[in-house]
Image 1 (cartoon, rainbow, N blue to C red):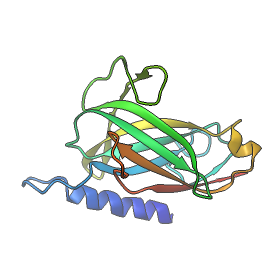
Image 2 (image 1 turned 120 degrees about the horizontal axis):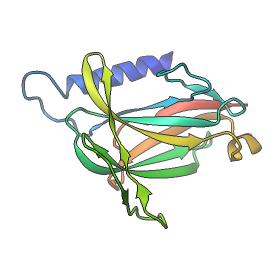
Image 3 (image 1 turned 180 degrees about the horizontal axis):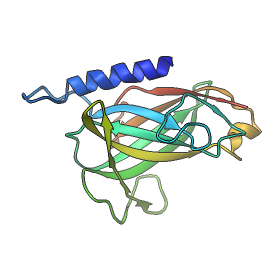
Amino acid sequence: MRRTALLAVGLATALASSGGARAVQQPASPCVAILVASSEETPKNGWGTRFSATKTTDLTFTVLFLQGFTGEHVVELRVLTPKGFLYQSMTVPTVVAGSASGTRTVTGYPHPVSVKASSRFAYQGSTLWKVDVPFPVGGTEIGRNSLYGTWKAQAYLDGAPNPCGAATTFRIGP
């Protein structure tokens, strides 16, 4: 519940600074938030903060961007273990507010990576853009090595050294 309240405040702040009928100063980052879901544990179109390694096959990280954010970009998600170590980095090329097709070369990947299309996401009368990134849980080192506790996910945009928005936390238990 606390995460839901924080998400609502963060989205409201970002939306307030991004839209309206008058020209408003563009916020420093187009990233709004990262939501976490599991098809096995959260209701359809719902988000969660607590997941079970034995009930969840994959989590889906949904990175939200402001409405005016357009073009082709590369989003990197860094997922940190409960002890703060990098568990996995996932980089996906994406096209925001356009059609995606084909593959792109991504630094550090041996083969081209498929471009993910963004889609519209309605929130309190505003339109955001979202990009979904799958994160395997079932049958991974998480369950085999009891990596249970509070995890963190951070989004980075276009190779920037700093995260493009606030990190999100979620809990994985047995």
